[in-house]
Image (cartoon, rainbow, N blue to C red):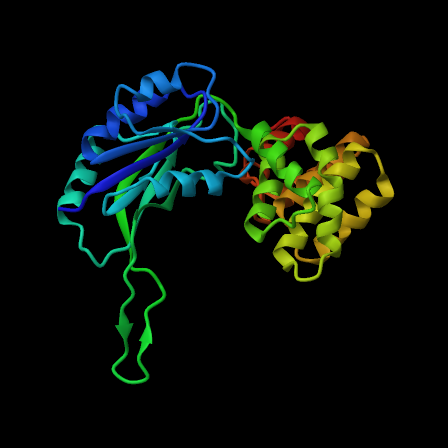
Length: 320
């Protein structure tokens, strides 16, 4: 039977940590908790489950903290969990069965991450998504191909049917947006993934000030060599929203039309609809809201393709 190390990084999670650990502690062979500066009873709660609790000075880098936690693990596989997720009884049983039958050649196990967001609006822009949650601590390399043999570099991944419930207590959008802006201020170029997450977080959870603070970062994205069309369209969406907020009509239409020329998206259609609605032109606004709901797809916030244009059309036409 495979052995599992549960590795977690936590901070001020006293309201949800026990729920998480109660749901999976008995399925783990060791539990490693890395605390990044809790000022509540998080560490006292963790101590009821494990004596492997480590303090880690936060340096604005989740990856470094995750790697530190993983460095303390000793079992065959590392299971990564956040404090605001848990397993229900049916999925506890699935994980138990997986542990008993896990083939040694499997290096990564993906599980379904299921959002139960309640009032928390974050980048959980999906309801159910496969994510890598369990991975082999030490990887062995294997030679493949009978001739011109080579090392197999791609990991062996198993997509399980296990569902993890993600039920956050608070919106972490402000924390993430602050961290992303700090990376830009340090002169760090955002990867494609972080660029997408920054734009998505802004549309889903950002305040007006968050958008305004992001202007310099996304203006640079437009000019950076190597940015893909997808990244440029993300930047265009953010800048269009910013210039609508600033009532800078010339720049608003510069970026809105650039985005439309690139193929458009629901976010841009909603921006144009909102602009015309604010200008007192309901017919023009309704056309753009219709396009958001029916002719385009969202790239950052699914609400721009569903709830937002539908509500706007009802508001303008008086019809549901």
